[in-house]
Amino acid sequence: MVKSDFGYNSKVEGEVIVTRADAVVNWVRSNSVWPMPMGLACCAIELMAAGGSRFDISRFGMEVMRFSPRQADCMIVAGTVTYKMAEVVRRIYDQMAEPKWVVAMGACASTGGMYRSYATQRAQHVVGRERPGCGRERLLEFAEALGMMLLQEKIRQEGGSLRRTFRGRTIETKIVS
Amino acid sequence: MDAAALTSRFPATQDLAGKDMPTFRVAGSDLLAVVSALRDEQGFDLLADLCGLELQGRPARFGVVIHLLSTTHKEYVRLHVDAVNDRVPSVSSLHPGANWHEREAYDMFGIVFEGHPDPRRILMWDSYPYHPLRKDFPLAGIEVPFPAADVAEVTGQKVEPAPMMGGPFVSHGGKLSEGEPSALDQSWTEEKPKA
Image (cartoon, rainbow over all chains, first blue to last red; front, side):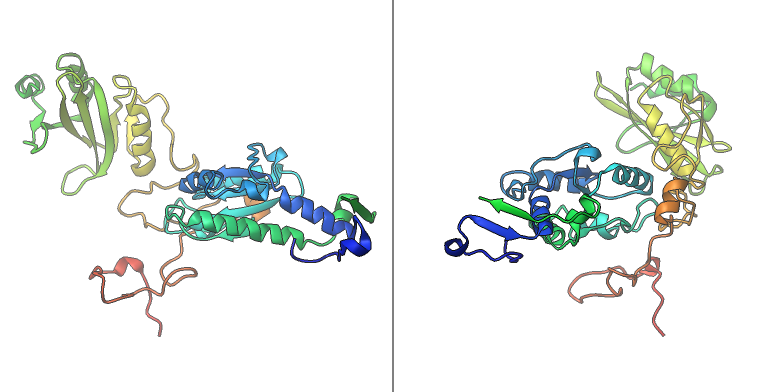
């Protein structure tokens, strides 16, 4: 955690951290993003590679690939989205529980990629973060890791997360470590 | 492969003197009998491919090419069929593997396969109004309503022709470097020169 939403000097404060509840909630959410892999094409293989040992996404807490939208936090759209599949992607997104994020992985999911075709949709309308590059180049896993870290940053910046969870009650929390 | 047996039994079958494999043009009315004879008597038991074509210089607009493989004699045979009035008999009763191939030929060209057990589109969605691989269909597509109306209302998605060269996220077009060969005719990029 590099952004200091709290100051901590163990000699002064002992083993108690005082922080904002939002920061705590955001920190927890960002470090345990459970992805739902919407693997549609070649980037799905790259997503599997990102889950492997070399480009480990388990170091971010994301090795838990939940294939049910009800149990996932983040839908990773990996691969070319055709018009026929776009309907399905949207419906699965609607079935996810709040809070939810979407990552468009690869060029096809972000912008339609190299395809200029009657069947391929060009841009995602539900995007939290984009990771460009074609999955068939080996660098996509680096981009994936970077993209997931960007997502974590985005989650950490969210305002009012605890308020939204508990519908208006603000709570101050002390974490005793 | 006994070509003489085939041409003597089916006089409308024309031997096209294929260079890589025996190739025949078969009349649509004979197709089922020919494929059945090849399968049962000459051992061509595997349908390797069934493909729709748009023909040039033939009386019919569309045709179908069928490749059959004999797993016992290790030989291929190729059959060309013209689609009279865009209709061709379906061979899926003889070779069940032809089922999806024929659905694809219908979806992409509009060739109707008579006797097909499940005649619907396979690649595009069921209500798509065009046949995309016809020569008069533009590569980028034609605007049609989005397949799911309720999703389109919520998200505002449209099925539009894909953007052309010079659109966002693409290069400005034309020659990018002198070091690489490039096509002389790039009219397909449809780039309009900036005035």
